[in-house]
Image 1 (cartoon, rainbow, N blue to C red):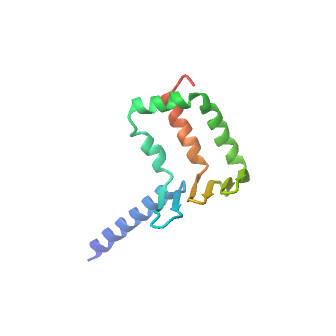
Image 2: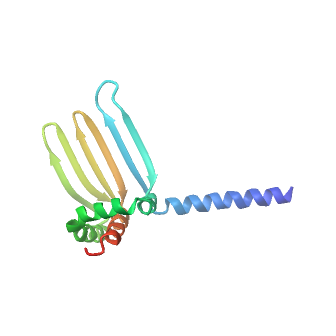
Length: 145
């Protein structure tokens, strides 16, 4: 009986530590709502650490192609990711139109992108560190940048 209790405690502690490790970088949230009859509503939460791990499973030729297309912008992405980390609270862009509203901001170290229109509401948020992870992997695939 004591053996089962120890095993359950070990498994429980392992699950808690694994969960803490997986979510320590934060969560990427994507929410899309179509504002029409029978419109779709999609809400996804993914641990942010999935991004760098998933990028290691992207086929090399696809990653090199993406890195080649993004090549001129990789230094900008690198600098933006460094600078955003210094400003945990900042409004970056706000565009108002008769039918659309786009707002991009950093709040508590997370990037928030909100695009609201008559047809769709799109909300995306992710930790600032995710930009660095993507830039790192793309730079590895395009070492000439």
